[in-house]
Image (tube, rainbow over all chains, first blue to last red; front, side, top):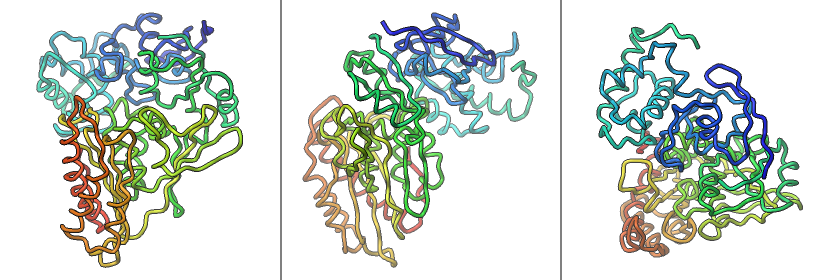
Length: 167
Length: 294
């Protein structure tokens, strides 16, 4: 059995050390070792995006990242999006627009939307659909998700969302 | 997932030393490899993460051409203005490999090493005249991109060798390139057929000086369509020269029937896509902005 490694990383702004085997994915570490169960396991092969987290600012499928690769990286998960009990613009827009039903895909969609809006503050519908193509939702039919992203973009641009954030 | 050791060498020599012992697999973005290990397709004793090696992260564009380190992820490639303008086919292909999450990690070097017949970036690399720079215990060797894949999932590397970078010649005057694939969905799919073309026109923009056309998903490996490419040299840019090249491209397609399409359908697609891709490459060679279709 390969020896466990000590990995030091930053998760949602906090320095975190964990032990993991080389064969453990970042998703397994987040969920099983660190109790950050927001990222979900869907397909485990990079198709569904339910495990999306931000790694050094880029969205990645955490099922296709080894835990050991997190050494020195900055990870942001769905747990780091809200500020205390204040949801951010994307989270509240998903609620207000009923952009979820079962909710399994939602953390992935929200992280992917955070990455999109950081790159492009006012995306077109086509750009939204293209950027979110790596996230699958079997409930909503996507229209409400697209509307939620548009509404989050508008809110964030007008500055009337949750701006005071602890991170 | 099965047990393995993990090494992340910070030098080329360090990586070659690990590769020289035991069954190792190199990993760039891991988007193919991690899934393949999980599914039991590969059983490496060691995974060698090559992302910390400076030579594999080179992204250098100047008058002598483009050097693309094998581990550079897709998003950096289509985010690079020089590549978008001068190596458009490469940017076209990187923009449609997987979804955005995959593009954060997946590299062109990895796409080539994985040697999937339907790999999107490989036809673009071939059409643009890419040369693979390979390091091994005996030094460095170079291989044209069209010779790099030798079968489905098989590349030309020896177990102790490493793909370091892909070199591209400088963009010629009045040249342009494009990659396009057919998929039944809008995005996030595997090519039923993919075609890349790079063309050089004369000063008037009315005649082909040379062309390189490459096909994906129609044979065990991506193919350079040599006769089709050569047929365009010296010909006027018109429907009949382009149709002839498309016909020659069709003639080398040896696809299989599978869940994505029948062989007959794929051969038909080669003709259609080749015409469209050459036409788009010509437009770019003439300085027209055709944007990029997803």
